[in-house]
Length: 125
Image (tube, rainbow, N blue to C red; front, top):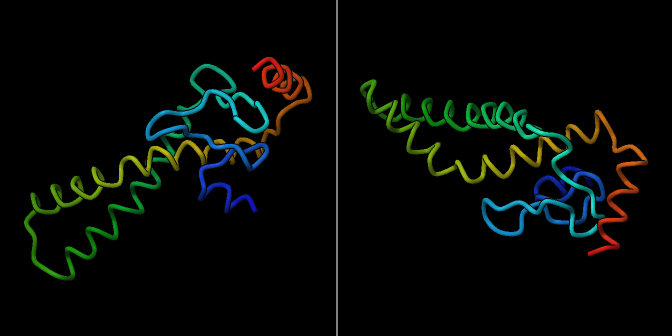
């Protein structure tokens, strides 16, 4: 269930609301349960590290395929990897944030007071 929510870019708390309203634009709160996504200042800095790991798993197979299919120069490796990462960067951005939020929700679930604030925000909207 959680893996499906991650693949569909859904809320880490209710697994139903959309995290993004349009490409590269996040909803500040879940449209379904009202939970605020950014729990504290700098919350999404950890998603940068998740993005690094995702980029590694995109770049390395690209470099291996290049090595096995042709004899590239060092610059062809560099530009090939950069090109592939540039193409996949919007996906990495979206999924790194969502994966980080789901990891955080599993390790540190929302407290009741956070859920009460979310319910009040949703009721006011």
